[in-house]
Image 1 (spheres, one colour):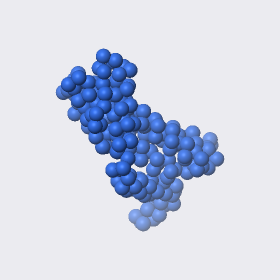
Image 2 (spheres, one colour):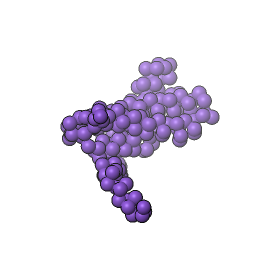
Image 3 (cartoon, one colour):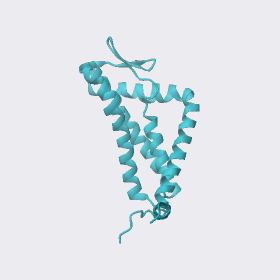
Image 4 (tube, helix red, strand yellow):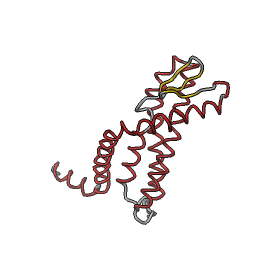
Length: 182
């Protein structure tokens, strides 16, 4: 068989998957571009208020003796400081999730609900990540780089992927039945 014929058969038998993949890439690039433009205006809310201050509150709930507080996006506890900078707010994981949900075949209502619930799940996961990083840097500083760069990033993307798989399997398809019984 000719290679062109294989390609034609492959494209024909995987049309939905190819459409999803291309639409996902287009959406992800688009929302990243929008994020890049609005990011300077959203930093005070997303980084300072919703991440640094919320993480400090969680730290104080877990260990009240820390008496942590936030000043200029920096979580402080005594002389110890951890700066929460742009990129630490989990937005990329949220954008990946939103692009995947909107590229997938499901009703608009389920896309909206999935995006909102999914972003909230990723946000909560990111708060856990920031709190873990605070304790890592304070009590096990030699593990901070590995936890920050590798484990933390993978954790956020894994949570977004897991949410997408669960949401798509439950609500995928226009009728909510993506996986049909044969």
